[in-house]
Length: 229
Image (cartoon, rainbow, N blue to C red; front, top):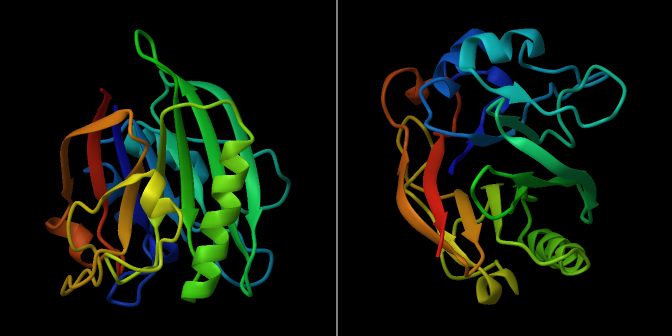
């Protein structure tokens, strides 16, 4: 299974131009069966989708998940998931996370032919460390109430430190930071991460650093290939 995460910054590039087709061209370069996206909706008004939803599959080969809500937004608190068409969805749940600013998470259970089930959680954590810790605790408590399954939490963790600010998650999951993903023009921080439960192994991982990725957003996409141990 190949997974990925990308904060698309509402399709606004470092040239300050909103170019959804440029964003889709970057997504198309990322090796992924499932991709978590952050900041997929515009900030103001009714928060319409920044990406042309009807063009995603044609340009990337991936399908945006229907999060079962009305309105023009594509995501849940800005989070969205794209999946390859052959991925079987077993269950999906959207959570509100605590904190001063609205944040959310998407929990996705998938069934993969010939493999054990897998749970993926898409997040974009808050800007304040105290809020991030509360959000991770809330998320872990929610996962503890579900049947156990190999799990990956992925997204923009907004945490600059590699040793602090991750609370209980650091003891229960192994962290994978494929490389420096922020700022795209001059990468200095590993804000975008994967947290993997102990049953999972990493075969390969990386950051997309070339081409349009260097200017389509202020973040670079990260990806990983994982398998069950």
